[in-house]
Length: 422
Image 1 (spheres, helix red, strand yellow):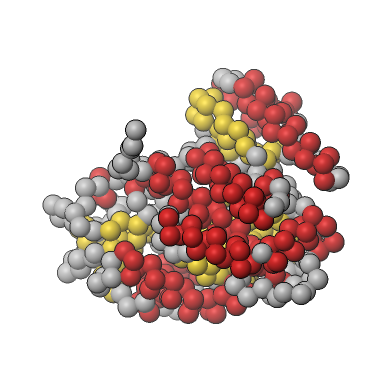
Image 2 (cartoon, helix red, strand yellow):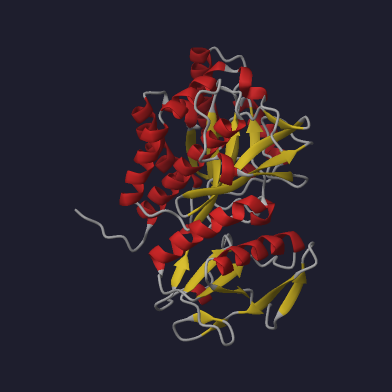
């Protein structure tokens, strides 16, 4: 299904689309050179927002679920990408252990695991699913919506290795964000590849580290194309050690909200944009499941904070990016899926009950798959800007890869085992 591209009449995004399409050889060479210097993530997904005048990634997931929402056409590309990724990490790999979230009994989440199992089976690996929850002591099965079942086993920790009964993997793939912390069962493993590494755990990551890395990547990319980096970058600020529930740091957060709004207003004025700017307030670390707050005025913070229990700690103020994409009149945003350095697919996250300035990754969201496998790498030169869905999807793939590259920068900068040079 191709969404109604209501963004087609907005000139800034058309100018950006034109610039990216004209620069495709330059862009692909630039990515190629970057991946010679940096290590791609094993897999990732990126939420992209298309405001018509701005196109930017707003969230990057290093242990993405939702693989079952992609089209069957993506399978061959995902298998090829999986082969490339495994060959770089462990060419002689035979067994792969997939570690799920603890809510593995959810049939839709289990469908995501079954799809990953299918991809790595076809890439030539024996794949089994092992749960690290201490509550799981026996093997069980989860019925899937298509009539199949997923088998989940309890992990067995040896002295230096992690595996299952009669199954010793050389590669362990986390589909678990480790949002509550890193369990000891995953630490101090010997001669086993853990993907992603433990410093990529949700409990350890900071959104501000990722955005800082993304700003660096976006500035270099924008300079390469001779364009304004703001068109692809959400501004942000960090408020350290606040507790809005107790009124602690309220003035600091209000000042940062106003600063990001003022910066955004200046850009809106420069580009003749008539929309009212907004910011999104979220936890810089793990959110504890609390949805981000949307703010259009710093004065609204006190009233909103009283209604929503944002976690105490560091808060992130991020420039809000509208979404003007629609499917059947419902607000939508594209989500780009990658494996190794390749875009392998994507889908639209659609939410009929939320607005263009609201967080869509919330209960009630639906998913409309898009065959990025056919469109993300095959732009159509010569098409009028805004008129070609493949061109639009190619742009989404570029944005996804920029965010994935930024995540590589982020993990290099936060790697506790990285060598430090004076």
